[in-house]
Length: 414
Image 1 (cartoon, one colour):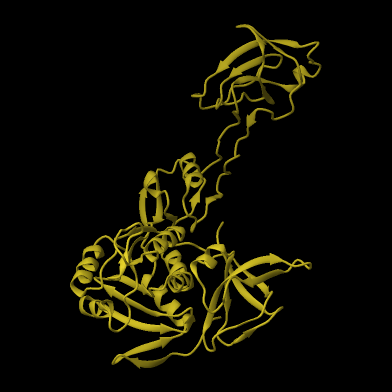
Image 2 (cartoon, one colour):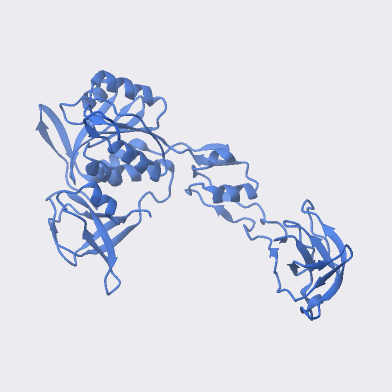
């Protein structure tokens, strides 16, 4: 959808490729690949993506179970029961939750059951009773069929797919896998992503030292976590070749991916460091907001480098890092929710470039989704991004967008 041809240009005595967003997205996805599935213990599977579907071997629960402590009864035996004329039935026996099979209900009696106990065959409801003795129970209403019973097969029927492959394993999926007696699961482990903000001018938020506050490192770590990976943000790294090389080599051993931001001009340290200790391809992408990008590898670990401008870094992450990370994790759907919207304003887009901008989304009188830019489309700031409902994407062949024109918009998860 977003494609412009590749060309090259020269700057600072170095040749930098100019690449379409389509081609760079494909290159990043290929570099990250997919993490090989592993069989792990159930507690270690939380947060990972299921690689092999979970099949229910049999019904779960296998038997009808009492939903709470009470008395199992056949509804027909208390058809005439009322508050004014309760029906008293003898207590036949007590059922324990540890019993592995259901007893046979004796008509004209009740059975005492505890939550999770098998409901006797022939009993049609479980009721609570205020008036009972060790021998008798008084019931003052007729319960409906199935009341107080957790039916067999409520959680899963035998032979069905209980949890599909590609699903991220949260508490609900872990609980269901445990209920299905799966002690181990095949998963794609959560990728470990080291986030490195680079720049001698950068300072940490709250620092007393003068400089540019690092927002990119914190932003990218949050974006990585939102994409389903595990982020490890390191402190600000100065734009010094030896320090930068040592930091990258130190973190390669604990990372599946390294994401950097800043220090990408040909006068900065990062391109030379990556070329010295690994390999690197420095590119300018036909994407606006723009900036220098790079993709490389050190010790077999992919290094994805994005611009130092915060909005450019965020757009780059959304455009090509997030989908690649989610594919690496094994997600079936790597992309955010995308809607087709009608422009509700007029703005210009740079020729030959995919233009991304923050938009507010709404519905018009006809029920169609509309998109309106937030702030100046040519000078987007973090405040506009924070206020937006999503990002609008104008294709490279469009230079003027007017009311009613159609564009794709990705929607933030909220």
